Image (cartoon, rainbow, N blue to C red; front, side):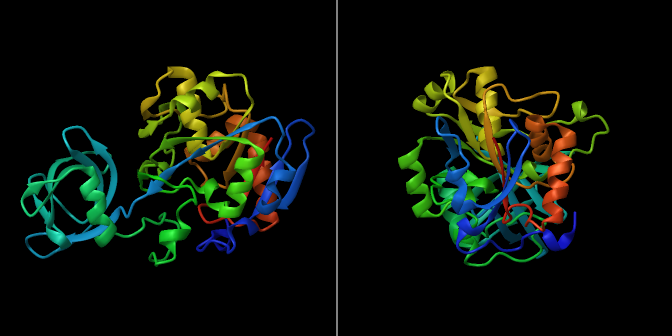
Length: 327
């Protein structure tokens, strides 16, 4: 993966991103711009989007000794605790201090690198909504690790879809980032459009390190699907999923018939989609579960072929990069 193709900043306007369109019916590949997306979408489809909102999940504190510590909030846990990644040496029982009277107590250190912590403010336990409120003041947008720069004020807008609503993600559903307000309004007028929520966790960036992909332990992410969206998924209407997060949530529901919970579905060429017909997605990291999800639609050989073409054509890769449409 040529490093110069990794997009460090988004395009402006958003809909000037390029799209590689792969038509599975005739095998054709077309290169276009996102603003021309409607020219390639089938007419009879319903479109599903993830309305999760990225929180300022990266924040900095210090130990009693004064040593600096970096937190990345991952996901809420039962009993008002949280899963976090911590950069800096910590031990169970340790307290970490932040601005605005925020304090974290380290409860458990797990082998996978996550830590179970409880937060308080000025000595009183706080719940998720209050924690997010504090992080909005002291936190940073958690740009992916392959974007080698600090976040800036623009990222608070750029790393968020125009329809982001439900707070809780620590990474953006990046296929959604290409929609401008005007294009999103046009989308709703042309197509039946529905939302679901999957709060993207930091585990989305975790590579598959197992030699056999069946041995990979998939991360869990909280999701919720409204009744109308469930009704649509239960119907026979052809579906376009905007992004891998939407795809996994739909497919998890199609298998488990649960409208909310934790999604840990791993889609790959030996576990193919059962309900999603078409996919709009960005280009993903090598060895990731996300590129394997793409392969679940078109096969490993074709996925590699399409990615090689995208590299030859100098597409922009990953979260702030260009897109692929599989129809």
